Image 1 (tube, one colour):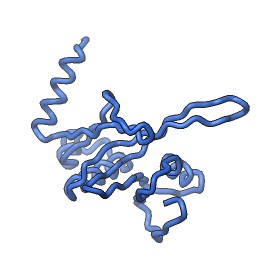
Image 2 (cartoon, rainbow, N blue to C red):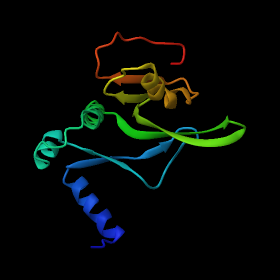
Image 3 (cartoon, rainbow, N blue to C red):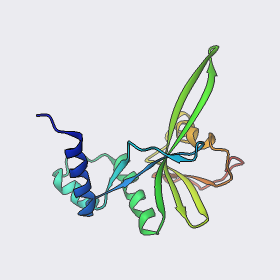
Image 4 (cartoon, rainbow, N blue to C red):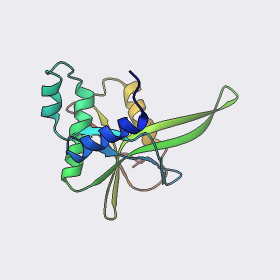
Length: 158
């Protein structure tokens, strides 16, 4: 069955107006502009989500990200999803990449770039989680929230 994009958009609006889902806009960090498409949606109540799915799809990484989004909203932050675009030379060819920052949390003059990671079992995973944050050249705080128990630390990259 084919569904018109306007119908899908209306249904999504109904779900947001019923406070079942909330959208986060995508923000180009370097270009300092919002994208007009591709919002990211989060469940306002994870328990309702799990009950609706009959507790079948338990993806801890997605659930953790959703809970973190909800927590930031409860704390009063405006939350966007960040995009960092970059061009790099690889094997003599210019390549273009787009990396996602899970959250850009804004509250007044405070801004945080936040990555959510369920676990960081290897150096490769650590580099993957930090890659988008290292592409940001401003001085706002960058945070990786990890589900594992690790000692908090900071480095010279913010």
